[in-house]
Length: 119
Ligand code: HEM
Image (cartoon, rainbow, N blue to C red; front, side, top):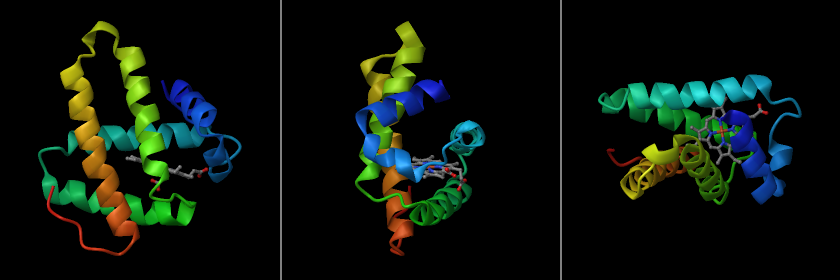
C-alpha cells in the first residue's frame, strides 16, 4: 500500500519528490505507523492533538508547505480506495476526507505557530 501511495503521489505531484529521501523504506514504515497511531488515539483528543501538532511542526522542517497537503491527501484517499475494494463507499470516502482535513489543518496551523482549534 505504501509503495502504491508514493508512486501515486510522485506521479501526480513530481515536484514533491525532492523533499523525500532517495531511499524511502524507513520513511514508509514511519508514515503508516503514524496513521495507525492516529487512528488508535481517535477517542483521546488531547493526546491526538498534541501528536498531530508536533508532527506538523516537524513537517515545517521537512519543507512541507500548506499547498502540499491536498496532494498528499488525494494520494492517501486514492490508495485507501484502491485497496479497500468493495468495502469502500461514498460515506467511507467522506469520512476519510473529513479526518484528513482536520489533521492537515491542525498540522499546518501548528507549523505556522498558530493556535489549534479543538478537534
Ligand atoms: C496527514 C498528513 C501527513 C502525515 C500523517 C505524515 C506523516 C509523516 C511521518 C510519521 C513522518 C516520519 C517523520 C516524523 O514522524 O516526523 C513523515 C515524514 C515526512 N513527511 Fe509527512 N505526513 C503528512 C503529510 C505530509 C505532506 C503534506 C508532506 C509534503 C509533501 C510530507 C512530507 C514529508 C517529508 C518530506 C518527510 C521526511 C521524509 C524523509 O526523511 O525523507 N508529509 N511524515
